[in-house]
Length: 328
Image (cartoon, rainbow, N blue to C red; front, side, top):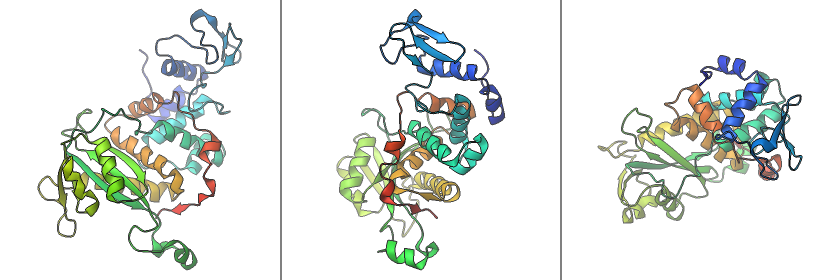
């Protein structure tokens, strides 16, 4: 097997060849080597190639299609060399990469880079696991509140947006972390997150029960929303007004992830629309869960998940009138 790029410089040089891009995409889409027509399902020798245009052609239905059909880059006018570099940057920049920075790097317009980033994040989602793929524990559960600080807002905006104290008027992100037992790729801690509408018992407990096996130990803070968790799990809580660690009972693993998320939102993306927040959270969760892999491993993990992941601009901007939430 040919040696694959390991650094950004090597990736730019390698994927500058469109034929290599198509060959790699073909291995991702059709790992058995049998190209399938997206229209009629013909395969094998019924699929030909239009070499001058780098397109594929079905001899049965006459359908002409590219290697991008059925992936997150379908219908994009940008070539695969730009797409692959964009995926590499998103997968391997620890604090993410802004659309302005990506636009300058690729030589495209900022709106195009913004659309690319959201489509790539769609392939980084880690919430489509099987129902039997639950954490075994010990697990940590905690929530964080995302939104602009009142002290950093203009007085007029503060009076309009801030109607209470603490987490009021902010978006709630709930996370569950499976503690790891070592540095091996199969034993490191893993995290799953969801943007929730409230932090009450009716909303948080189902999230934990959906992600953590029955009877497994779960550690939380002393929030009253977790009181009923003892009915289905071994629950222990630490009161942060007194201490942050009590033996094995703590949520420091999730606090570490929240700090990474805060740096990405506050330092890189600066302003995030509430209805887009879940994609930024899932992006950070993906990099956290894939952190022991090298740059090529993270890139390949994203690319292995692009088939069938389609996000149109219409869907992406359907809630565009909901306003923006400043992240400080």
